Image 1 (cartoon, each protein chain N blue to C red):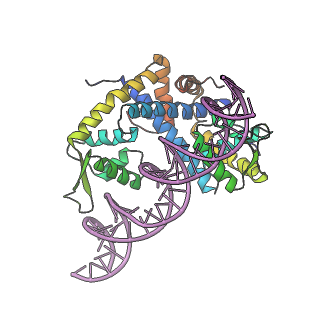
Image 2 (spheres, chains in turn red, purple, green, blue):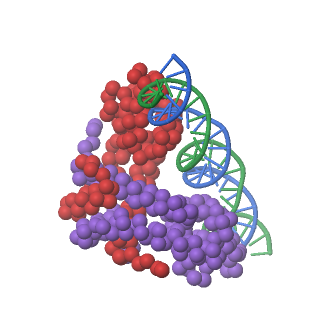
Image 3 (cartoon, rainbow over the protein chains, first blue to last red):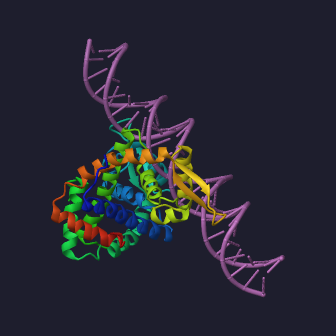
Length: 147
Length: 147
DNA sequence: TTATTCTTGATGCATATGCATCTATATAAC
DNA sequence: GTTATATAGATGCATATGCATCAAGAATAA
C-alpha cells in the first residue's frame, strides 16, 4: 500500500521546513556573528521583560515552545550568564519569580535590531497579497488563535 | 533605536515557526507511537533508496539539511540499527557508498504511511487557493528552486 | 618523483536535549 | 489534625549536537 500525497501537500511541507529552518538559521548566524545569545533566549527574555512584575516558569512555559526541563535549564543558563534572576515565589513555596537583570534588559535590546533586520530582509520582501495569504494559511497550520 | 517590524512580517514569522514545529512534532509523535525511527531518518533512507546504485555521504549531504559530522553520525546510527551499509567507494579511497539493507527498505516503507497520514491531516485540509498561495509564498521564503 | 594543498569522512570534547525520576510544597480526602 | 494525591521545578543518565581537529587519500605543483 503506497500512499500518494497530493503534490501540493508535499510541496507545502518541504517548503515549510526549508523556509523555517532557513530563516531560523539566518537569525542564529546573525546573532552569533554579533556575539549575542541564540534565538531561543530572545523569546524567553522578551516574555520575562513584558511580564513587568516577574513571571513564573510555569506561565513562561505556556508561552514558549519548550518542555518543562528544557525551560528549567534555559533559565539556569540565562541566570548563570547574569541575565535573569530567580526569586522565591511568595504565594507558592514550590515556585519562583523570574525577572531580568539590567544586563538581561540590555542584551534583549541589543538582540532585537539584529533579529528584526533578518526578519525584514527574509520575510518583509514578500508582495503584500502573498504575505496576507501566508498569514492566513500558516495560521491554519499553526492551529493557533494568536493575533 | 527600537525597530518596529510590520505586523504582517511578525505574524508570518511566528506562524511559520509554530506551524512547522507543530507539524513536525505531530509527525515525530506518530512515528514514535508506532515504534519507528525519527523523521530525520526518513529523508536519509529515502534519498539512499532513490539513489539505486548507492550514494556517497558527500552527495547525500547536499540533499539533506545536515552538517557533515551530523550526517556521519546519522549514518553511524542507521548502520548500527542495521538499516544501511557502508561499503568502500571504489573510485575514491576516501569515500564510501551507502545502500539500504532489506530492513532499511522495509523500515522506510513502514514509515511512509504514518508520515503521509499526518501530512494529509495537517496540511491536506487547506482550501486549494490558500494552498497554492502557500506553495508560492513559502517557495520565496525557502529561496529554493525545487519543484 | 616528492612536497603542498584540498577533500572526504571520523572523532574528542563541551554543551544541549529527552526521558524518567526526585524533592518539596500544595491541595484534597478522610 | 493525618494521609493520599497532585503540581512546580530540578536533576541523573543516556543520547544528540556543535565545534574544532584529525587521518587518509586525492589532486596539484615543483
